[in-house]
Image 1 (spheres, rainbow, N blue to C red):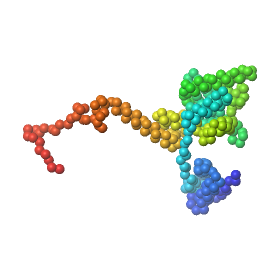
Image 2 (image 1 turned 90 degrees about the vertical axis):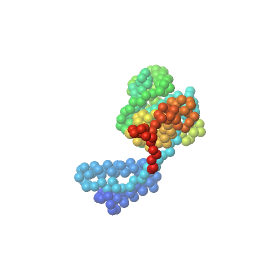
Image 3 (image 1 turned 45 degrees about the vertical axis):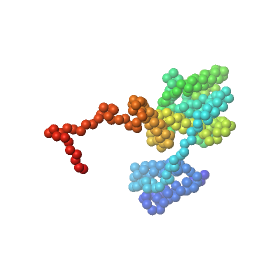
Image 4 (image 1 turned 120 degrees about the vertical axis):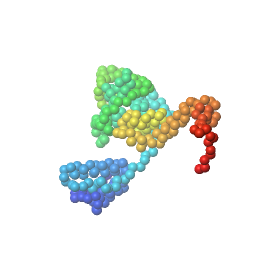
Length: 320
């Protein structure tokens, strides 16, 4: 696509024609079909560039500070239902077990597509039921590259019993393939690979292509591979798992991202937690007290008494 031109040379104050140029640039990007998020990334790059110019003494102000990038619209999250996920896994059973294990791990860990492709057997400790996500695979421009995770930080997450079992079966299958070819798997071997020695990872585009073919065959065009990540997050939220824990498993830079993305599901979980607390508190009261909307203070031994007068006379009513 042809990118609109911005006259950066001579860009000065955050007022006047140059600021208008920046805002027009954002408008042109929107007309070209770019999303608000992508435009805001362009805004961030421009801002960082001029901040560096300030440090070098090339400019005395950053004209991007008062520009107006588009606001972000809240995205609707549509995770697959447990039944839909079950259909996907069942369809892979015995036909494409590699894809089946990949879908299972994606749904239970919430890992990104590139992060899953970058997993090596040295990252997995099945005895301790842990998984370390330390890298990601990119195939932008058809060039496969190993890079850092999105937050440039590795993270270790716990695995549930079903995922450990799936990975043990997958490991056994890969070892049998390697042995038949006269080779072995090592710690640097990838979990999912087309090579018998697993020396090269799956390409993310290949994962998406295989998934789309499967979901379309099952009549589930609305389910995307990324939605498996949403399934993991919303399932945890529905079980009352804390936001920080969910953010840590997903690899979000801060819990605020998790709150904004899954606010509706977290609110539902919070209401369920309130109902559970109400039930627990109701169980504390005797059966006789549950019939009233509130326990009687008299029955709980806290009846209040009017203080007696020190002169021995009866207390008089006072006018308010």
